[in-house]
Length: 435
Ligand code: GDP
Image (tube, protein in one colour):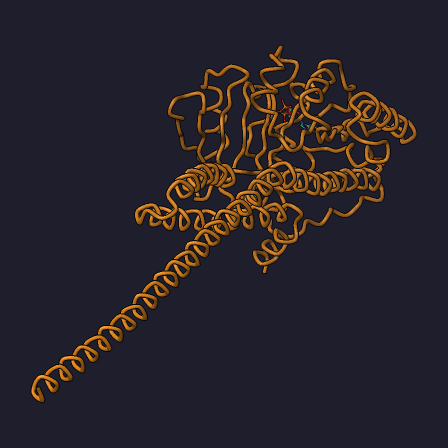
């Protein structure tokens, strides 16, 4: 039942829209490819039988160009996925947010595990996890069985901050990976990066950016300048801001907490709305969240372990500590994390369908239309050739009929002439005999 629920959950997920769209567009390009191959064979046959020579050669060249184009698009489409990239200062909790979304400790997080290069988490079909170093040629693959092994492998890799290490994790373990989402963790923006190279190499194809900020401090100049650069290269990037570690900030006087939250909200929304101008004021509320990635991760891991909904322990009535409020806070933060995920899924699926498939769809339609036109022209040429043949045959028939009638006429004349001669000769003979 639980696996059926998981499948159903995945099918109803907004992410599945992308998966379905990808399947559909791949099928359409499969059909276009078959059609082009068939047309090519037909045109070659026409060329061999020397029909409509010049035009056939020109059409064949066009079809060959379309074939190359479609094979290329097909390859790109097969590899297409939704990409979400996480940015922020070191230790703000980027790796923990990714782990929480995947409900598993995949990326090493915490002291000594600073992400020092770009690290993506991709879905793998089999049961084995492995890492691929794309800076090597050909890319090097190493299997990893545990988080410790991955941490060790990452520690041993001597990579600069713009290198890219791909972690492949079995999709059976993480539904989000099955739905074609790729997570990209980045080195902290405070690690004196060459921001332009980062953006050009890793960000231009990202569908969503998540800025993970530490809610104990405030969004700073480096974080802002990074997104200003992203904004200048991509029109209206989809940016979410997670005020992480909200558990640590949300302790103490409730009035004070409310004030701090309001302050963060105002600053981050001003950044998105007025500085980057990538969302409206109304939309900004769906882009800014106050979460605790660590609490969400812990909760999801314990749910996974027990495979049963966790019941909160009962409240100790005599305790000074306000447990009820504490628990309410925790639940609210988990709920907010889920709200973020729901908005994120809607946004990434919509954006990826538009950016990844729109261009290819119109190219596919243009090629299909052009092919119909080519085939219609061939049909027109064939039927005009047929009517030319018919006219030619008719003309030949008329000539034949004329010759026949002429022949008949001449034959008749000859017959008459012979008749006349015979009669003349008979007369001459009869006259001679009577003389
Ligand atoms: P990164 O460098 O941005 O990837 O940060 P990490 O994910 O490695 O997190 C740095 C440290 O912050 C780790 O020790 C995490 O356990 C801790 N951490 C991450 N998220 C939270 C959170 O929401 N609350 C608290 N209290 N700690 C967190």
